[in-house]
Amino acid sequence: MHQAHSLAESGPVSTPAGPQAELVFAPAPDGRTYISHQRVGYPFHITRPFYLDPDPAGLLTLYLQSVSGGIYRGEHLALSLEAEAGSQAQVTTQSATIVHRMQGGGEARQDMIIRVDAGALLEYLPDPLILFPGARFHTSLRVVAAPTATVILCDAFTQHDSEASGGRFERLVSDTRIERPDGALLAFDRFDISGALGEAHFDGAGGVYPAHGTVIAVHDGCPAEELAGVLSEALGECSGIYAGASTMPHDCGAWARILAEDGHSLRAALKAAWAAARRKVSGADPARRPK
Image 1 (cartoon, rainbow, N blue to C red):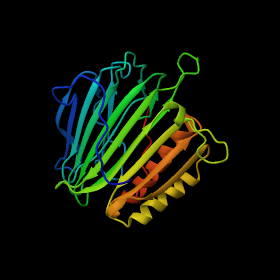
Image 2: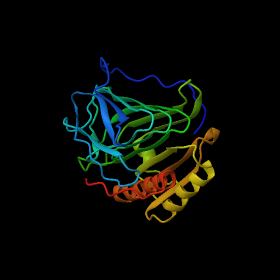
Image 3: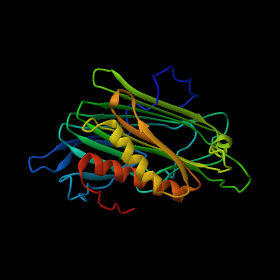
Image 4: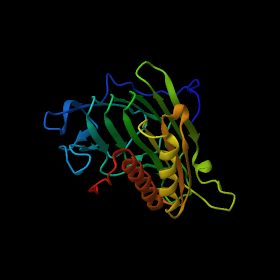
């Protein structure tokens, strides 16, 4: 996590007229969170809301699905999520998303904005991307979190040689900016990685880690050191990974980076870190999510 800098220029992609998925969550008088506004178009589809967690009571779980079979060259996806004051929601996906081979010098892009008002909890927990050989993908996420808001995020990828030819994805660029409603920057994270680097020996002991993940918890209801501590403890109990956790700038929360031997180890570590963060910020274990 570091201060913001100019973003790299992206390749030619189509620009959407507006977000293909736009969702607003609000608290109902009975305490349950509901979808107060929705506009969802191709390639996205949403399920009905689920209420799986007895605590925090009223937390809405929503599955965001894609009907397109993956992400293709030239696509420009845009998403917007907003949690109004006092609402509690989790948005996840039903399965991993494939990023297909990009031929002819093009790329695909996804831009997302998440706004979370005071006292609200919003989790965005998509399953990992699966990057095919030749894939080029640029994703940006802007999080606008009010004081006392809680945001838990996962961002992860693995790779798959779909043709068994030794191919690797070409490039993945990921930008995450976290700020206050007045625009004050809290943290900025960026990585730009190739498939070859994605399988490099990072731990000095010959370990190869083709699956990578990040967990971010924005929360000012406890010291950031405590939040980083629970992430570190949870990841320390996981196998097949090389990981670390630390506080974020301005004491706004904590984050963890995970390198994993395979997709199974990555998913287990992401789940452990998310559950630890949820437990810390809410005081309760999350319910099991059917996938």
